[in-house]
Amino acid sequence: MLKAVGVSAGVLAMAVMAVGSTGPAQGSGAQQAAGSTVRVYSTNTEESFVDVGNDGPGLGDMFVFRSNLARGGHRVGHTGVVCTITSAHHDESQCLGSAKINGQGELTIQGLIAGNPKSFSFAITGGTGAYEGARGTLTVYEVSNKVERLTFTITN
Image 1 (cartoon, rainbow, N blue to C red):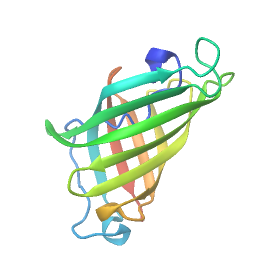
Image 2 (image 1 turned 180 degrees about the vertical axis):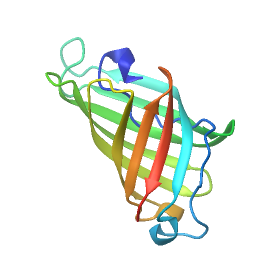
Image 3 (image 1 turned 45 degrees about the vertical axis):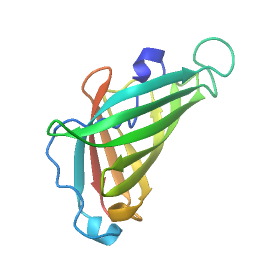
Image 4 (image 1 turned 90 degrees about the horizontal axis):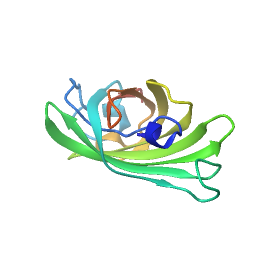
């Protein structure tokens, strides 16, 4: 992931692998999704480092990726994420992403990440469908260079 380019760890490389899930509540809206947890594995399918200045990681460079999400060995969605280096000195990036959960809707996330942690969290900033107006936390745990375990905890 981002390790490969020497930038911050790869965010919402929201890959989905089989972990248990309590999925969203039936119906729509954040009220009904509140208190739910979605657990998946994310596996990158496309990724690119965009160098906008001098050679090597620097301010404004981006890491862009798409990942498949899976649970129990079955694909349940995908993500799209862009991480932009906001401080080369502090090895920090701002990441924005969306996770589309098949048949349920989308969740959006954002946050800063520094260094190359094995796990980190981002804010869930909204959603559509069953996740409309969602808020909460995405916790990412790096399983390997291309795979992450994602836990979306929706609080409202």
